Structure formats: C-alpha cells, structure tokens
Length: 297
Image (cartoon, rainbow, N blue to C red; front, side, top):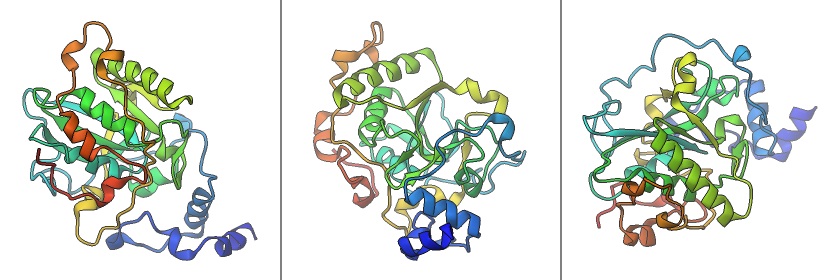
C-alpha cells in the first residue's frame, strides 16, 4: 500500500528523470520504490558495511579504454607526464564534470565520471544507485598543474554544491550522492582541509564532506571506477536532459591567501577572477545550460 500511495503522490514522469534518454529501461518495483523514496527525501542515510557490499567483478567497464572525451577529444584514461589527478564528488556527476571541462585554456586534459570511495570493484550504475556498493558519484580530473592549480579545482568543488547536505544533494538522496574529496598526496590533503575549514566558517553550517586518502580504497580494488560510456560528458551529447541536482550556495570561497597552509603558497590560483565573475557556479546549477565548449578568456 505504501508503494501505491507514493505512486499517486509523485508524477510517474519524475521517477526516471535521472536516467539518460537513450538508456531508459523498465524498472523493477523495488527500484521504482527506491527512486520514489529518494524523491521524497528518504534515501539511504548510512553507508553499507564493506562486508555487506555487492561482490562486483574483475572486468573493467567496457568501452572506456581508448574512449576520447566528447568535448576535448583527449583520451579519457590517459595521464600525460607531468600531469596530476583530482577526484571529488559533489552530487550529480553530470554537472560537476561539465563545470571542470569548461575551465579556460588547455590546463584540463580530461574529465570523466564514475564511482568512487566504495567497496565493490567495477560497479555498474544500477549497482551504485542501489546504495549497496558504498560508492558516490564522482568526477576524475586530469590536469596540468602548470596551467591550472589544484586550488582552482577546489574552489569549483566547494562553490558548485551544498557541502552541508549529508547523504544527498538536491532531489537526489542516498549515500551515492554524498559530497567527498579524495587526496593523492599530503599537499592535496592540507589544501582540502584548510579550504573546508574556511568555507564552513563562511557558510555558518557544519560541512559533511567526506575527506579520505585514495589509498584507503586500495583494499577494495581502488578509489575510482569509470562510469558507463553513455554517462561520460553526458550533458554535451545530443538528446541529453539539462539536469543536475547540485545546489550551489552562492558563496564565494574566501581568498586563497586567507586560508593557505604555510609552505603551500605555490598552489595559488591560476584562473583569473574575470573567469569566476562571469562563469562561477550559481544557484540552480546554472552550468547545465552553459555552452559545452571551454570558456575563452
């Protein structure tokens, strides 16, 4: 009876709003109920225990090896010499990815969406959405630190969502939509933690963002697993729906100089303020309706 009542309370067209048009598939009653509960604000509130997570598989996501970024044209999984990687999650990964690939210049080599910080090797989208893998929808950025600072990526991360929203973001509820930033070295850790402290003070609310070392997930097959090919750069593809659940708060991260950890001054932002003035995240996840091409300054 609960499911039947919820069916009438929520328009049926809303149930599948998160799935790409080309991939709409019949949903099982259990999955439909889970989606409806998510929409009603009742998604899973606690991470699955590692021992209770789905088993997963040894096979990597098909179609990713050799795949080229739909907008930038670069190999999705390549990390050129001298480049670095950043991995974060701030709700729906479609809009989160698009905001980063639009950075001006050629400092962003590639972006990808996938599943991170979980316990099931090589999960599928459906498995991650079940809440039984422990993953959150994430973005992997390959960037040239000579042209884009890690702090530039950090600023976009904080400003592009509500980091105080716990296990969910906007209409998307559940552990698979939690906020997180995962570091690969001590410098990244220090910068994440210092910027989080500063932004929390600015927002005036406790930040719930998960901060952890990438190496913490080696025992589960790794921090990062690529999402399906149809999810990659989804918002730039013909027929895509302009959807993103992220909730930018309209608060600019404080100037780097005010929170920079001692000894890390070399990470000063490289993107000009003119970029942020014109293209920073705004309430309503404005990035979904922005042009797909990188910004020209």
